[in-house]
Amino acid sequence: MTLLFAESGAQLVREFRIKIFRPGNETAKVLKMRAPGGHGYSEKDIDAILELTADKIEKDFPGHEYALVPVSPVQFNFVHRGERASS
Image (cartoon, rainbow, N blue to C red; front, side, top):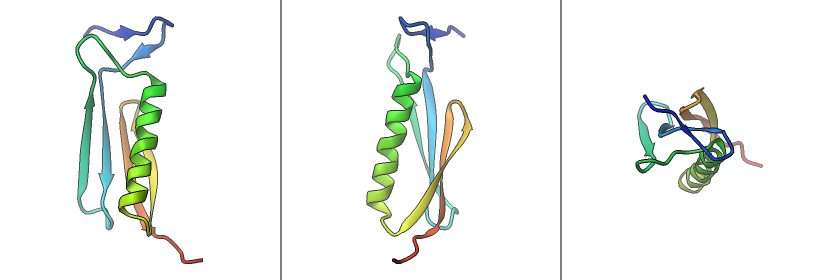
């Protein structure tokens, strides 16, 4: 396996995975993010994609709480924590 590095020397990853568990945590949607050939994702890129994913979950499930659970440096789960308490 060939490692990719940014000009700054930071290691890049070719792919990573995000799992979004639906309310009840019985099923999950899996997003596989793959960089084009010769390119990779930096830690900053991954953080930005996770933030966009969290915003989408907030929009799709406004009455529910989710927690981001890093499983490994290249695998992340958004786990349903329950319904949001009413104010």
